[in-house]
Image (spheres, helix red, strand yellow):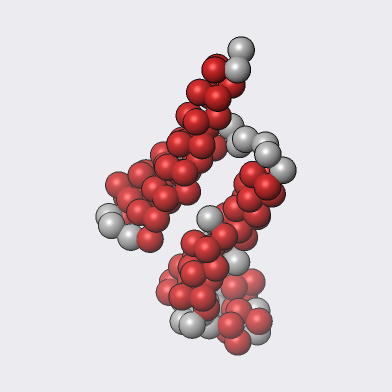
Length: 116
């Protein structure tokens, strides 16, 4: 998830109209639709939250904790919904962290069932 967030930020940062944003165009309404879309793809979008979630999941894993399975299923549903709206895109990459979280939850469930 951290890798996806970083890659997304790097990719969109190259086309972001930073000077326009810093000049206040987003606040004043002077920004065009491309500028607004890029804003929602970068600081206004999911990248910060996705990076934080990825760091939180990594920390939990290092400490031996398991993330609930619903986190993986929610990420998978979110990615699938986005792909259904806009077609094949970077949202397809949601399959990787979702699948890993779901698989880890299944494995953790088998281990805990076997130890009872």
